[in-house]
Length: 425
Image (cartoon, rainbow, N blue to C red; front, side):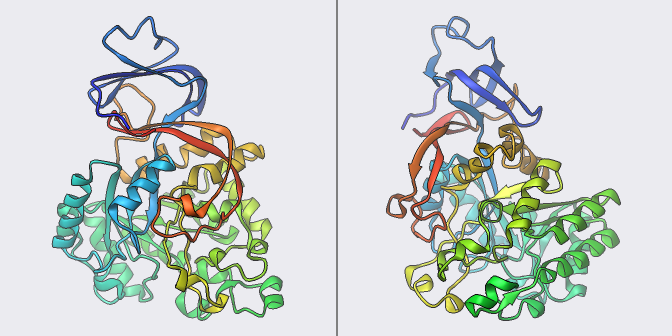
């Protein structure tokens, strides 16, 4: 680990610009925590004798990843930060479903101060959309915004009451706050534990229909049209939802959506013989849905890719599938799992990184996520081809419930920096 450097140059790198969608060869010059210059002209001969140099040896250099959905559940700020940096994530939006729920200005302010004192990754607080995440009474969004909240969500619990959701969106629209919602009709999903269909029937498990997701999303999109609020569907997993988002954007709504890396790289068949580490909400879908979601990244129908990091203890997972808690850790495997799509020729590297860097930055109104002069020097260096086998015991998270247990992946992060300070590598 290195301390902050006034002048630093990353040389001989594959530079990925997610905004321009380009890949070039060159270097990055960093000064006072910002990118001073980038491109082919940044060479050892041009950076000056007072500049520290790192030879990237042809590795990829890109903006650090920005994860819009991760939970602090069963984690600490330190463990989340370590896992994020090891996975090339330099900015993390932390869900409000902590203990206690982050629904007051004091709790948001406390989180912001802890995050600042962490001196590591950039941690952003998503504050509770409703008090106690109970879906009954909207939070004090104006005060919570001033305390440092970057957006408002309800964790993994959908707001059932349409009138409450309308009030929340109206209130948020008054000061252009971002409403972030987990879309799943709780009544239609009921006791379902995996995707509804033939495979669930064969396993003897209750299913969650695709319609449970899109019904809630359709309602939210209509409310967004009524109120003019900025709205982000945190996780979509079906073509029904993707089509609804495309239509809403065509109608001029200020809406966006995300997909978890799990739903882009895994399907319901991976559950196999009741593998509880793959019990997720929304559930893993059919392979045809997965392929359509991948195409949604290519077309721009889906804006961002998230880890949906949610740590669970062994006792919550080593039980019968129907009784297991949903969720998986994912910060550390977000990038290498996503690179599966690049190696398979399904998504280009610039387009993939756009969904994890510049696009989330645009939605959140953040200055990072760009490989451009004047941008914050939140950067990562990684070898997209270096293979490794996921060993849960070596993960930096406090929990080990990874759906990629013993999977063969490619893509090792060699360096991660925030504001020009190298924190990993």
